[in-house]
Amino acid sequence: MAVTEFSLDEEQHKQRLIKATKFFFLFTVLYSLWIAILIMGVYFLKLGNKWAILTMEQWILSAIALISIAIGLEVILLVQYILLSKKQREQLEPKKQKQQQYVQGKQVHNYTIPLDAKGGIYSKTYILIDEDRVLNIRYQMIPPKNLWGQQQ
Image 1 (cartoon, rainbow, N blue to C red):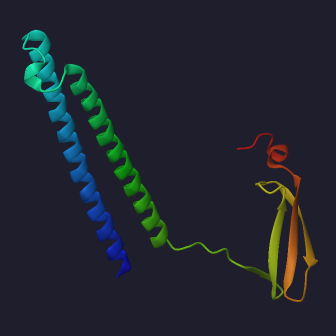
Image 2: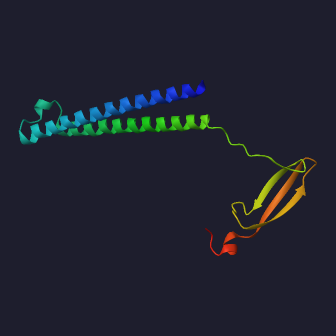
Image 3: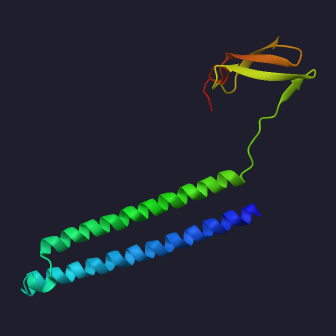
């Protein structure tokens, strides 16, 4: 049941994001067209500043401010959607559990030196910790590039 609730919530959030994006895009286009008409009226048709209520500078500054706010809100909504979908994916994925290793009925804890070593030849030393646990120290004796010339 929880899986369908997550997908419905994510789908609703996606639909809201699409609607908001359409609204912001339409608002930006209409406001930009208004500014273009205003510029043509003031500079090309010589109508002056009085017919547009505000001055040219005020209209341009308001356009910059409003379009910046629209872009900022769009970014916030997009980041919120991405974080929500990532959180829901993490909740739906099963957590990977490390398999416990056992030798002669005792739990083995592995420690490799160096920590990020991959490949090569290792020495293995088993140290008894207590009746139920053993420490396996793996020391890299020969790195893979020394064995094959170059690491692949």
